[in-house]
Amino acid sequence: MPSRPPALRAKPRERVERLRGRAGQEQRKRRLARTDGLCERCEERGFTTFATVVDHIKPLALGGSDDDSNTRNLCDPCHHEVTAEQFDQHRTMGCSADGLPLDPSHPWNLVR
Image 1 (cartoon, rainbow, N blue to C red):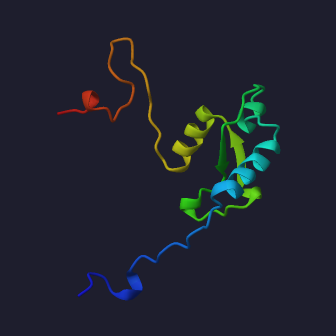
Image 2: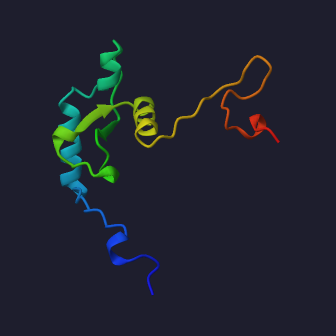
Image 3: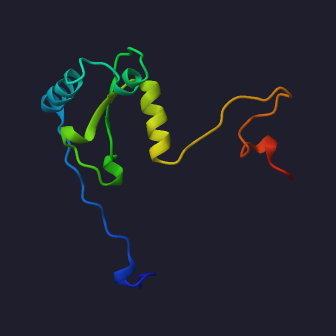
């Protein structure tokens, strides 16, 4: 017997078919050529950095499409930042002057 009534069960997402093989490589090459292979976020900040990742503006996992209009070219650091923002994975890195981690959720900062 199912634990939830059929009306309350999570509905499966529509699966986005992505190109594979040579067709996928050509698609990636075409998308990178759109910005001459440069990172779009770095360019907005006044930097010139090679793009290594074709990123989906609205991630496929969150219902985005695999159209060219839903993609942007990013370098690795920008891609990691954007992905963390999209999936709420913000972390504060580094240590304070006393050597304790700045991230309040770090185990050393938890009150026991």
